[in-house]
Length: 356
Image (cartoon, rainbow, N blue to C red; front, side, top):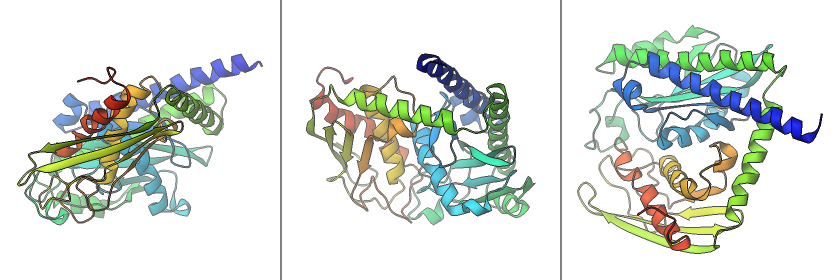
């Protein structure tokens, strides 16, 4: 078979993989108990290879969920342990520093097995209506006050639900039926993705995701790096001062544009707040990547390889790199300004191409 025909076949399978995660996301929308998921699409869904690299994501979703989830699966693999991953397992966390930045977002990861062999993972995230504690707001002074903190752990093991976890959950949240229902909805959407993936593997006579996954990551990486060739390389800065909660907050960034990517450094940003507007670095990175990628590489599908050239750093303890046990419940209040922050710097690199 010629290289051209192989590339066409790979592209067809890539598109099919996207349709798999689209159906995964639609299952969550149909079965979720929370209004924010059903009506606002406050969710994410994606498929990952055995190493935890995101290969495809559903179009439905928010940058704060999709781009944080892209890094979360590796945490699940490391914390659960590869020798403790079994067929029928489902894992869960709402750890703000390993998930999406606050306790209200539940991330569920399910290993996918085919012919008795682990071939990858499905992951999904949704915002639940309540997670206990003070409720959804900035008034807590530590993350301990903001609700039930679920470390990475098993929700199901070999198909059997962890009833102790469900019991703890029911007794720590106000809307327990809706919250528990969302846990099961997230698990069900991953299962839908798994079943559709198996259909795809059988149709294309594949044994795993290694070949198609390698094609996706390599082509995405090359296409993204190609986008940097035409950019004026250099260093550009921007800052903004916001009202904050009790005192003004300064957000600052310096971006360095080079042939291998863009580095964003938040040095100069204010220190942490005593209120729950602090932002874990993963969430700040998610929105920085989103803003930059929208201008620099908007046509490249979102996956681990296309996100990798966008590097983000911040001084430990600044408000965009909050450390445990800082309160982070409404981290989006500042996090949603990060795209404007980085685009303000990118405007100096690409005048006239960045929206006002």
